[in-house]
Structure formats: structure tokens, C-alpha cells
Image (cartoon, rainbow, N blue to C red):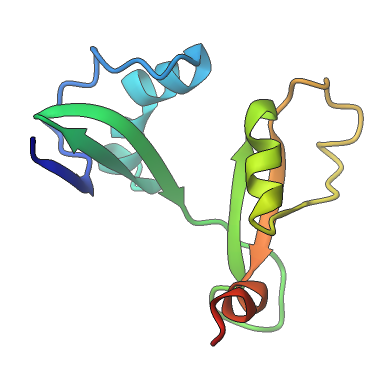
Length: 123
């Protein structure tokens, strides 16, 4: 019953993974490897349980105009069903042009600043 979290590997079999969300499954099956190994646009981590991938998370870098350099926080493109989960953990909505007029079931960009994370962790 070994479990581990590790970066996606080129030879991982992603075809049998099912999350219950067709869009997430499609991304994982088709694009996670391309983004990580060909484009180097992000890293996908997998949670493996009993030699089977049962969950994943992709981390990508993005930039925003700022006079300060370095990491300012984390963001996610939250699925509609996950918005309450992220909001309960302190993430707030980006007010972006893309979000205005977006369909109600569209992903929502959410953000949590490093300052808020440090406060929550008591640092």
C-alpha cells in the first residue's frame, strides 16, 4: 500500500487515469506531458497509490507586471465546483477582463498572496 507524490515521468501510463471531470482528464492525457517535457511550461506532480496514478496537480509559472521581482503568491484556474474549496482557504478572485462576460461554468482565476499565506501560517 505504498503512496507517493512525485513529478510526472515520460513513461507514466496516463491513459487509465479518470478524475470524474472530462476536461481535467483530457488535459492530463494529452497535454500534461507536452507541457512538461516538450514546452517546459510547467511541472505535473502525480499522487501514486499502489502503483496507480490517482491524482495530479500541475504547477506553471506566470508573470504579472510588477516593480518587485520574485514570487508574490499562488494562483489557480478553479473549476466551478472547486471555487468554495479555494475561497475557504483564502484565495480571492482575480478581476480580469477574461472573466467579465464568461459563462457561469467557466474556470475562475483565483489568487493567494504570499503575505496572506505567511499570516495564516503564523510566520
